[in-house]
Image (cartoon, rainbow over all chains, first blue to last red; front, side):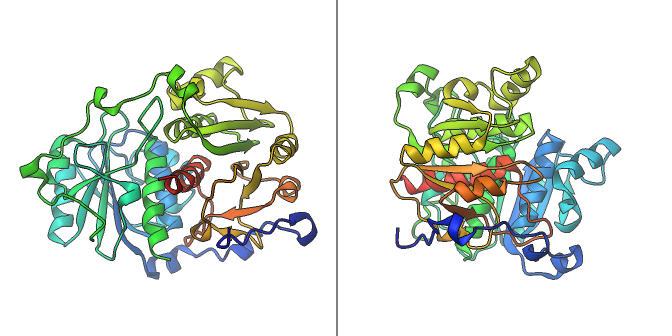
Amino acid sequence: MSDNTIKHSSQEEGIVKLSILEMNRMSVEEFHEADKMPLVVVLDDVRSLYNVGSVFRTADAFRVESIHLCGITATPDGTLKAQQEIHKTALGAEDSVEWKYFANALDSVRELKEKGYRVLAVEQCHGSIMLQNFTPDNQPTAVVLGNEVKGVHQEVIDECDGCLEIPQFGTKHSLNVSTTAGIIIWKFAEANF
Amino acid sequence: MSDNTIKHSSQEEGIVKLSILEMNRMSVEEFHEADKMPLVVVLDDVRSLYNVGSVFRTADAFRVESIHLCGITATPDGTLKAQQEIHKTALGAEDSVEWKYFANALDSVRELKEKGYRVLAVEQCHGSIMLQNFTPDNQPTAVVLGNEVKGVHQEVIDECDGCLEIPQFGTKHSLNVSTTAGIIIWKFAEANF
């Protein structure tokens, strides 16, 4: 455990929670100016407002470049219900993280590819690359997450450069969209340290 | 990109989604018999039924050994509302993953330590170890996740062997509980490949 400098005497040395002020949280203006990870998260036909808000919050935490909201995915300027529900989970991250709406996810994917992004669908596919074998590099990348039930549309996968798969070993083989986004975004964030 | 065997011609080679049958999902009985990761997830005063259900689903996907539900955290055999809401997110993973209830999280932590588990609070603390610097080894480990607003109680942290922190760089510094669980559980799962 040479890497892990865990203190094994928290009671004596006092492992104390950080106060809000000690967290050095950015203002929204500082966030807009700050360097971002070269990662775009594309949500295609995500039904749950909770998932949308949660992805905004995770994207804020790791300074994701942008979120593309596609198809039926609600936007932070949508209906009053969408605004309220997204805000309840995003807790304001919908104001810090840049986002853009596309009626059709194919237009998002094509725009990203024209701009030089590698676009990867997050899915369980034949020929997909397992997340543990994937090493993010500096290439700007977009990841596409799909609908809670149907996943990423096959025609969107057909436009992607490949599939990234989170291996699963249980009875369900279907992670929650916001959990999936968290794992994938963390994978990219960790490679930046 | 030598590690990343992404196919760059998905249209020609056809990256096709797996069918349900191709996913090799386990039955609940097979899950109970299967080897688990030596990881226990402790939820202390988690308010949201959605978060509880989502953690079950992630724990199923990566074969977490057990979930300890503490304090106000709802259990899958609780009120009808709790049963329904947990099931809606867990999608049945509440039947595969082993769980145990403790009225006080301190009793969970003490039991785990007596059994030889290293117990780590997932929090933003002075002296915490950053997740990117943490390398899970074979030591049985428990991670404690706290309330959505208040986090892990300081008196629970005092009983832990250390704090594990997910670094955050945005305006909020507060990831969703189910997202946090996903990132942490994945970190342990990835180390097992």
